[in-house]
Structures are given as C-alpha cells and as structure tokens.
Amino acid sequence: MIFAEHPTGQAFQGRVAPPDRAARFTVAQIGAPPALYHGDRCTHPAPHDRLRRAMSAFCVPEELLLKILAHALVLSHDAFSGPAFTNLGAGSFDLSRAHLAAAYPAPDPPLRDRAAPLRVCRRWARVGAPPLYEAAVLRTHTQLHAFAAALLRTPGLRAAVRRVRVGGGCAAHVGGVLRLAPRLHTLALGLDAPAERGFHAFPYPSAGLRGALAAVRPRRLLLERERCARGARVDEMLRLVCGAVAAWDSLERVDLSNYFTLDAALAHALRGARALRVLSLYDCAVARDLSACVRPSAVAVAAQNPRLAAVLCRGEDPAEIRAKYPGRVAELLVHDTPHAPSGLGIPRD
Image (cartoon, rainbow, N blue to C red):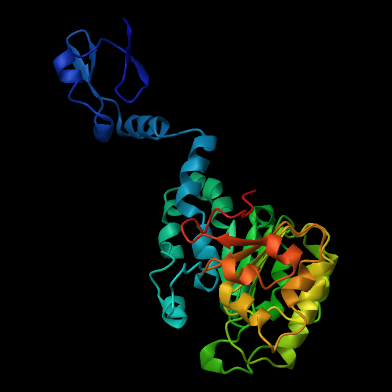
C-alpha cells in the first residue's frame, strides 16, 4: 500500500492508477477523481467525499484570497474622484463636453457586478466585505442611509471604510456616516444640488455635522462645485468645511474640482492648515485667481502656509502664469501632467 498524489494536490491511500490514465484527470475534472485500486477491485469515492475533496482543494489561505478579492472589489482612484477632478491635459478647449463624457475616466464595473464574488460562499463574503466597503460613492439620500445602516448592523466593517465621496446635495447630511468611519483618510464633498432639483435644492447642513467633521482625521479632502450659483445653504456648508480644514492636524492634501473658485474664506483656512502639503487646482481656477475680479490673490494667501510644498496645476502648463505671481507662489506652482492622474500623492493606507 502506498500514498499517491491526486492531481489537485491531495494525497490519497491506495494503489496508483496507470500513468496514462491518471494523466487524463485535471483540476477542472475534480468531480471525478482517479479510481482507487484495492487488489482487483476498483472503487470510486462516495459523492460527499468528492465534494469534500473539491472544497479542500480550492480552500486557499485567507491572506491570498483577500488579495484576489481586493483586486476585484476595491474601487479605483479615478472612479472614486470622478470627472470633476480629471486632468484634461493641454489643449482641452471643450471643458463641458469633457466633463460630461462618461468614457473618461474609465468607469468601474457596477456595484452589483463587483460584489458578485461575495455570493460564492459565506467564507468569500466574510473575507471580501472589507475591500468592498473600503470606498463608498454616495449620490442619493437612499444610498447614504443604506450605507450608514450597514455600518450600524456590522460594526466590524467600520474600520474598513477609508474613502467616502458624497454628492448630489447629500454632503450636508454626511455626519451620520462620518461618525461610523474612524479610519477615514479621504473625504470628497459635493457642494452642488442635483440638476433636476434646481440650484436652490441644496439642504441646510445637519445639526451634528460640525461635530462629525471634528471627529474624523482625513488626510485628503476633495471639494466639488461645478456651478457658479451659490446660496445661503452652500455658504453655510463652506463655513463648516473651512472651520474643519483649519482644525484638522492630519490634512495633507486638498483638491478643488475643475470649476471650483478658491475664495478668501477657504484660502485663509488653507493658510492655517497645520499639515497641508499639496493644493491641487485646475488651470482655469488659477487664471480666475489672477483676474481683476479676485483680489487679493486667494492662491497667494494659501501659499503663505509655510508647510505647503506644491500647488498642482491641472491642465495647461502654468509657465506663463508663474511669472505673474509673487516669488513663493511661482516656486510652488507645478504642472500636473495628464498621463498619470492617479499617482499624485493619493493616500493608499
């Protein structure tokens, strides 16, 4: 009696089948393993034994399974930030068309498709749930409440939430989610109401939003405002954000969307940010900052922060603009190339 190796890697006891016969069996045919020869009698394993062997053959270590599932479940950085922060590159004259183009950045698979591996078995669902909740893009109040309810039901997932993007007028009520995400490092807030609801549909900030913003310690903040119309509700939301920016001691980078105009209040908050190192703007925002309607220069005010290391200018090369700014701003202006929009200091942990 000897011990033979099954093609799947599992040893079984018995005499080995002839080599030409054993070679026909592969992992794809694991449901019918080679026959076991006991003398002149040939027997096949019972059905439950075949199932047990099949499950044990595919029982990979959880560390490896986590890496495989994370590759399919984690939302890409381009899909998380969205087209409002896209580096359109030099020569992009039709900004509105580029902003509305659905093909750039390349969309990730829908959530129902990305979550398909979690329906394989309970073990895959348990291992793959944290990568799925690593990033959340919440565009409606229904999604916002459903995400918060899921975190309330499963406290173990709260530590997995690292990136949260809220838009469509829901940013004013993001406090309920922020309290349930203690390890959040990237926060994206949309300050535009949905187009179908009108410009004045942005809600008043919730009562506990100030405390919720003070409770988190993000390393990166993305602010999106693509419309020029502003109201008292948006101004109140911006005041809360400015107060949080000045108070956070962990904020390292701030990204403003393509049509976001840096105003004096936010510039003073950025000047007082204690850990700010990178400020990212689109070239049109820099050009507006130099126009006659914006005085004094908001970028120059933000550049007075001694810890600021770079002002990234997305789009055109700011070589001509650099000469119009004071010395420190000219030194900080850096062209953000459009070839690698995802590799510009985005926190990975």
